Amino acid sequence: MVKNIYEYYAKWIREGRLKVNSDWNRDLKIKFTVQDPCQIVRKAYGDPIAEDLRYVVKAVVGEENFIDMQPNRSNNYCCGGGGGFLQSGFKEQRLAFGKLKDEQIKATGADYCIAGCHNCHAQIHELSEHFGGGYPVVHLWTLPCVGRSRPERTDLPG
Image (cartoon, rainbow, N blue to C red; front, side, top):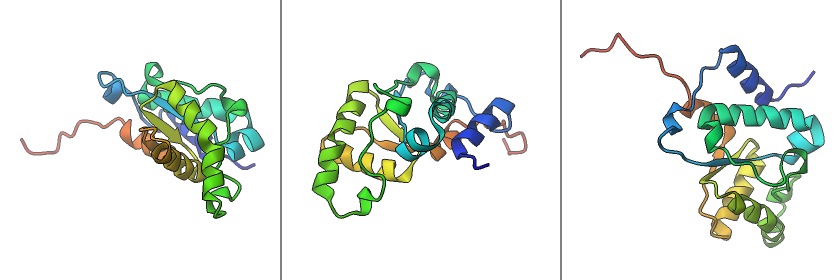
C-alpha cells in the first residue's frame, strides 16, 4: 500500500512522535490557506488525505489562523501547473488558466499559501507574482520545522 507524506505527518503528530505546536503564531496571527493538489487529493486519495493535510497545517499554524479556500478538498480548483503543464512552455496559457486559483487564494485574505506539491508551489508562486497577489507560497514540509517543539537546552553555558 502506498502512503503519502501528509498521512505520515498527521499520524506522527497524533502519536506524539512529531512534536509540533502553533505557539509561535499565537500572537503573530499570520493567516494561512492550503492548496489541495489535484494528483494527491482529487485523483488519488480523496478527502481523507485533504483532512490529514488540514490537521497538519492547523497543528502548526493554529486552527484560528487557518482559512480554507472555497471550494476546497476534492472540489478545489486546479492551480494549472500539474500534469506537465508547468514545463510545457505554454506560460501565457498556464497563467491564464491559473487566474482562477489566484483569485481563490486572494479571496481567503490569507497571508501565505501552503502547497504540498512542488508543481503547485512553483505555479502558485508565479501566479502571485504575475497577478500581484502578494502572498508567499510555503512548502508543506517546512511547516513541521517552524512549529517543532524545541526542548529547553540545559547543557548550554550561562
